[in-house]
Length: 484
Image (cartoon, rainbow, N blue to C red; front, side, top):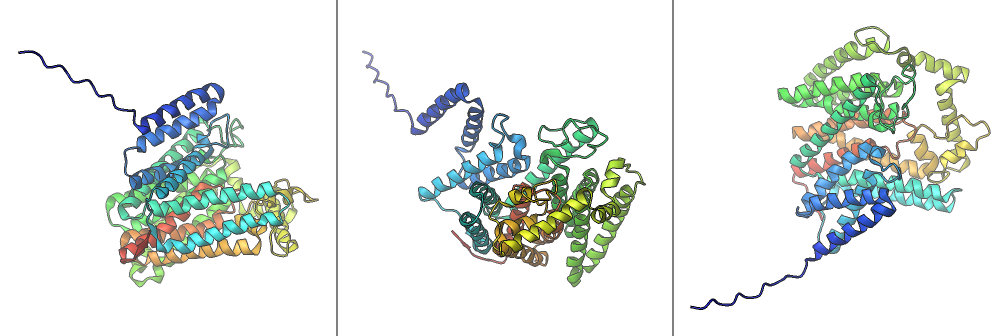
């Protein structure tokens, strides 16, 4: 019996995706020699794509959006030192947009909740108006820069409710945000206890007697404080809405951590914002007869918490001993004296407010053009010492005129109205989002005055995204339709 000849082995042609990976590897290797910073960014992007490669498109999109939210909060801390403007959030946002466009180009579809059409249209018209200011702005490049930052924030805010449009997915998002909050607190404690700061902190290498505050990922103590007051309502609302002892414990622990850390920012503005948050929770609950008992209990808890944590600390007594510099920053009488005497930050902000209103009037309500406010402030005969308006409402009005201001206010009013509806919804989870969202927006109306600008402040756009989730889930719970 003779052995049969073995058939020749069949060699398959390399798969298309294998060629793509090989090409990317070669490109990365070449860039590693020529431009190391760009090579690192490419490697990270390829790693993300490889991790998501075998996942269904909707799942991959949610994973990438979740990573995008974390990267947005980390901000410039994820930048390559040689390319500080090329940080993780921007790279991932570009990657996600390319992926969405490719998905649509090959016949895929994205589920678009109809309730998002109005806010998306308002943001779209605001963007178009911002870009149209090229026609009269003195600095066209600043128009493009400001509009680009506005576009990135708007896209982030809209991606969140599109990607996380069910209860289970929103719970996953909230867990991601909770984990990010823990990281923010950990970095803040590292600053306060060990004196170790991230390279992006404005207090880096400054003496501890003046640089007492925490800045965490945000580079500035006022930005951190605004992030905290946007986060606080979601912790406060947990024990109000739910009876689960674990959720109540999480809410109390998170609220206490937020309030304690807020003290180490020295932000008077966000102290007022915190009071507005608590007051909004109380008022919204009192209006609903079924929630009045919870409102009284919640108000009592908030009052006790304030009495034990905030009030003694800012008055220099009690168990929490703040540095003298922090106590002076919390002094409202000092702020009033500064305005009257024309010195200090109080006087600067007062002058900027007057100058900003003057810019709107001098432009006939049209505005100076997107991004042109800073240059106008710098050119003032009596330069106040800072070129930014330090007032988000004023920045929107000066750059975009009365039309841009009206568009933003309409968008903001839409968010607030939908949160108030959600706070009265039968579904407790929607009620949580609505109650916390309403309080966050009312508090942010004051809190947005603390940072020099919030145009590129990711927590604001993430908060807007969370607020857009509320009507999406409310419509789903009520059997509302979606369009693709």
